Image (tube, rainbow, N blue to C red; front, side, top):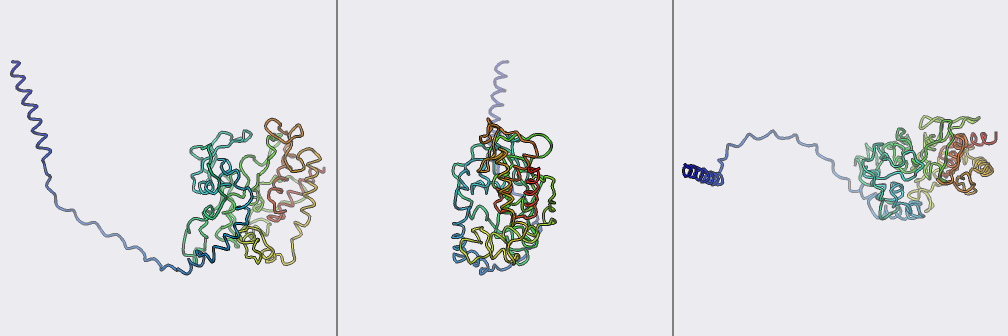
Length: 386
């Protein structure tokens, strides 16, 4: 009986080899071809490229003066990129960090322990949470240069679509200090919103909110305030502390009372043509030719008293022990504020300090938005004097 079972098992094993061999040598027979698919719709013929139009900008003759002007600018000189290796600063102080930020590939963490968002992910340029922090920053920091602001044209039909100068961003910009607020500087003078490229960086950093409410404000950094970038928000007429006073605040944005916001732009004033090599164009230094286009009789009266009033506000804040002569915020001990030497201020006093730093950091002496700057300044002075 055992022998019979052994024979059966050997037959099964041998048969399996036979099937394996047959399968490996099998050649399938090709079937009939299927029916051809329906041809796609022919595309629309493109227009002939206008080489002369391209050359008018993409030529050494055109670009060399731009490169020379840029070399004298604040973007290329000074120490604007000194902190660009830091993950918290690279989005505006490092060319590669700026490109990553605009493309949505920028990672950073909040490193200021006094920030309400300390340790949390921040929002990207679109107001969306960044999925993963990168506290390591960048190994090298380079100044913001041509590639930081320019990439590729969105359209080559300049006649109908306008020339975007291949700027990386001309869309409305969500503020990093409050992503629920968008700034769009497009107006009749700048219909494409080219000035929005400037807003990306020239806005308050998110470390400190505008002081509001009734609770005291604890300041733990001598650099408290909107950092170096409130130009766009002052121009828009927002993000100041609107202390009640005898001077009325103008409306916001293009619908407000600011003639510059309605009919001028960053590009028109800072990049106008000039007969002086160190002004206009890619120096970004405003020039007289740009101003007298509208202000034929000189500076408007709204800013003629700015320096006097701003000096008075500075001196009052120094006398009260809120700031030192350099404009830095002081803590309880009288030394510069820090986490170990915080200063506790009433919300109104903190608002005055915020307005002072906004007007100081804006660096336009009120020109960006004369009526809004004047209201912030005079109402802050009025509060301290009373």
